[in-house]
Image 1 (cartoon, rainbow, N blue to C red):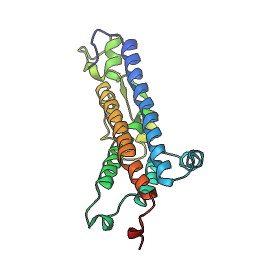
Image 2 (cartoon, rainbow, N blue to C red):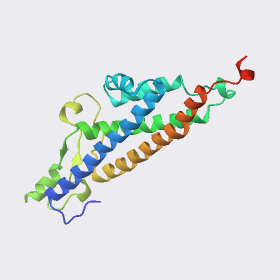
Image 3 (cartoon, rainbow, N blue to C red):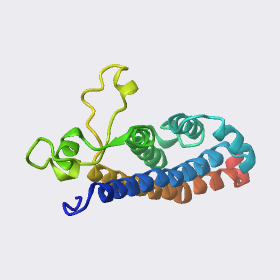
Image 4 (tube, rainbow, N blue to C red):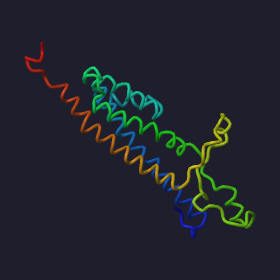
Length: 201
């Protein structure tokens, strides 16, 4: 919650600070996603980077990684008709990414402004009472985006939304790292082990 004693300039600086933290946190998500993608491809890091970077958006990079992992993770047939725990763990990562990416895109591309109600109050105009303090600085849907269609139901992102998004992004990064280190790499290492003679026939 923003401090009501702060000036508009201080509130804006605080909002932009949290906005910067949120955008920067996605670099860590991208780093983990790239490592998962590389492991799923099974090639050198520089070769995987060519494929990954030429895929233009994080949503499409997630789809690419997901498709590659479907050929690596155990199928239901491999697990007696049940979804394998490794596949369940990845599905949870993928779902969390899908949930957070729209907010990430809004933070990266939408303008940050002070609502008119606050500006009227700040400069001595109407309304006579202060607007909700936590809503003084917000990230809004841009004008061109609003013209695309039904965007009226999308609410501005407030400071508390940025704080929540940052915490969720950090949790996602930890979840991805745990999946990669404790599940994917062990799965790949197991597949690379030579089979014993009794298991080869």
